[in-house]
Amino acid sequence: MELESELKKYFGYDSFKTGQKDVITSILAGRHTLAMLPTGTGKSLCYQLPGLLLKGQILIISPLLSLMQDQVEQFKKFGEKRVIALNSFLTVAERKKVLCNLSKYKFIFISPEMLSVHFILTNLQELNISLFVVDEAHCISQWGYDFRPDYSKLGGIRKQLGNPLTLALTATATRKVRDDIIRSLDLDKIVKIDSTIDRPNIGFYVEKLPDYRNKQYRVIELVTRLEQPGIIYFSSKKSAEQMASLLMDKQICRAMAYHGGMDQNSRILIQQQFIHGQLDVICATSAFGMGINKENIRFIIHYHMPMQIESYLQEIGRAGRDGLPSIAILLYSPGDEQLPIQLAESELPSEQQIDWLFKKANQQHTLPDGRMNLNKELMTLGGFTDIQWRIVEEFVGNPALVTRNPERLQEIINDFIKERLLFKKTNIFRMKKWVESTLCRRAFIFDYFDEKMLEQTPSCCDICGLQLDDYQTTSKVSTVKNTAEENWQEYLAKILINCELRE
DNA sequence: CGGTAGCAAGCTACCTTGCTACCGGTGCTGTAGT
Image (cartoon, rainbow, N blue to C red):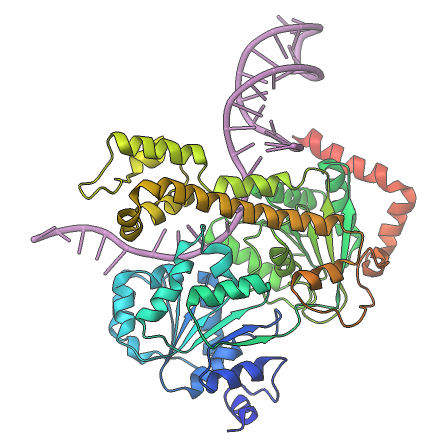
């Protein structure tokens, strides 16, 4: 079979992008495949085309509702109507109807959470699933252990669906993460298809500043000078919002904040405005970005450093999809690593909380079968967050674990927490190492992903002599120059002081 | 850890300073009625 003609027939394209053909060939040969393809190279096609050529149905596990909706839209654009996103956007009536007619759909999108619902799984077991796709598969490793535990259940679910042919897709995964994905999905004889994680048109630039105030100054200065559009990443919702209002109020650019605390409608609106060029800058938390297909993002600034190098690479990878020069700037001031450390610690329950819980359980809250009676009251009393509580439930609610080793249960939980925390702190530490590096930043990243750097990139990084001036805007350069001559420090001081007086 | 809100004291009549306590990211979701 000539794959190119099928591609032309269904999608109208003449040729494949890097990696696509290898992945599709491997799937059509009936081999489980783990594909690491760089962002923006059309990962979806890797299951869209085989899906059309294979007999049965295609189940696609996707991490975000908005991502599913986008992909359904994409299919409809190509004229494929046998597509459904089986999620909570459907009303109860719609969901019932869809479940009764599941066999009519060729492509079914679903979240790990929905897939873990027994009733839904039973319905899916009736189908003939010819391909099980895990999109953004690094989520298994990144989220499966705590934040979204249903990600760690995909392996078991795969089995219950009769071990269908599986395709795991990701853009950024270290060797360790890739091994974790394979282990978690319980795949043997897997074909691994890697292409480089490198994005040569994105330059790296790290700047060290004494404190947050200097960082604010610097962000304003950079936004004024750099070619737009761009994204500024923050690790707190509040600072993202503050910066967005500052940029807007001072008429520096059209900016909006974007984070998980905002309602779904505003999020969709802001995302659309940014994509269609009605906004210049997004001040965002890590909630922003997955599934953003905007070609011409020129800069990514990090006001705070992310929790790990993979996240950093995903975030900066949103720049320069059009292949034109783009810049990734990270601002660091001493002690910045404390925020991610704090976030990591607060995600997991503390040893004291676990201690308290087991003491309580010994006193009263025990079920007839010896398991702890975990109820909302205990969660509130112990000061557990939803995520912390779910982690506890994963262990305490596991009958096999509880009956096999009741006296060691507390120790097992504590060991898990310690191990997770150490892992997260190690990731943060490596991120900090990268910031402090005095060697080529790109080489460091290649090394982190066990990839060999074959040749020098021209506009590589600050260490290799990259000049920020090369990324200046051309349209506003005259006004910027005037202000620069006047005295930048004074100008910025004015902006910030005015802003404070306003309060 | 480091930023900051909120309050009380200090100082002066409305504003500054100082202390303390608290907070900080990512998303999905079947259940009611027998």
